[in-house]
Structure formats: C-alpha cells, structure tokens
Image 1 (spheres, helix red, strand yellow):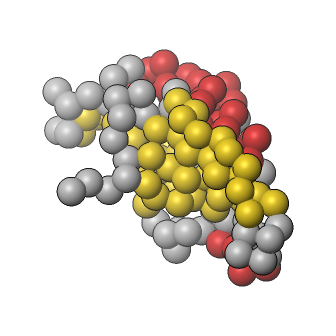
Image 2 (cartoon, rainbow, N blue to C red; image 1 turned 90 degrees about the horizontal axis):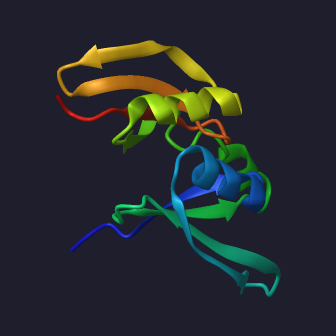
Length: 131
C-alpha cells in the first residue's frame, strides 16, 4: 500500500506547475483535460518528486469554499515536508522565486530545515539530507 496523491488547492494551474516544477524540482507527470461533475472544463494536473513517491494533484479552486481554503489547507500548520538532496540549491531557487521564508535555515539532528510558503500560502518544511 502507498499514498499515491495528495490534493493541493491552487489559484491557477499554470502558475502552480511553474512553482512545483521550476522552483521545487518536481516533474509534471500529467496535465489532462477533465470535466467537473456538472460538465464544466477543468484539468487533471499531477506533479511528483523525481524519485517517485507521493504526487501532488494540483486542483484549481472552484467556488467560494475552495477559494477560502487556498493556502490554509492545514489550518496554518506546516502540512508538507519536502526532503531534498541539495538543500542549498533548492533554498536558492525558493528565494529567487520570492517565496516567503520563515526565519533562517537551522541545523537539526534530522538535517537542515527551514519553513517556507508555497505559491498558495501553504506552509512547508524544506529538509536537507540527514547527517
């Protein structure tokens, strides 16, 4: 058994793809047209880390309730944890993009860590390799 996808509600498909692919280094594995249950057009957009594992379904907010959830899917807590092989390179791409970074990177027994917000405002831990 494995967790295949986690949905992140985003304000715009293309902006989200650019963030997750160009800034965080995910791979775009699917971008297909789809329909809502009432027949309106939408897209099925999935990105995954290059190593595989759990992917993200990038879902454009549809309606007031979903728009209100953008950036607050975990109630303001860090809800996503991204472990990378090259912390410094990923951190540099985040800062060049203008992502909101909470504080300075810290060195912990489990690796270098810093909190950042994705393009929608969700809080993530960026984690470097374990020592």
